[in-house]
Length: 116
Image (tube, rainbow, N blue to C red; front, side, top):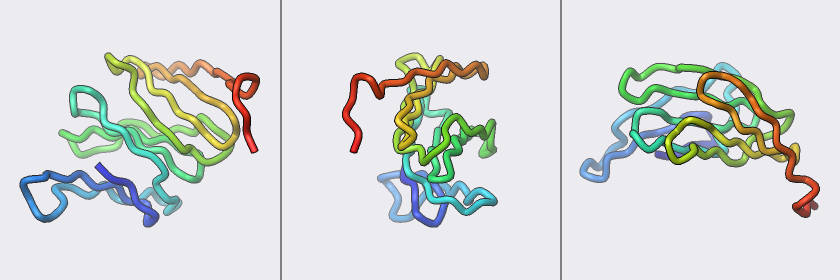
């Protein structure tokens, strides 16, 4: 899986020379800053420089959800071990944990980390 400055994400198969699937850019054409795939290999999470997070169904090849959990660029996305939660981190100095049923839980780490 890779994300690009042109706003696309690409799914790669190491057995093939070309990418297996291209997830098109969002209407905003914002660059992809972070990508992660859940443990089942069915969901892709992409974090964008416009502070949007996108969940994409890799098997159905469709967007499941797009939402904006931050006020600045998302720089990291990670699924929890059993994929119940998605963690996003941003230049807004926040980490947001979102359950995949849509409830967001805000967690601020700015007290515990140094930011320039």
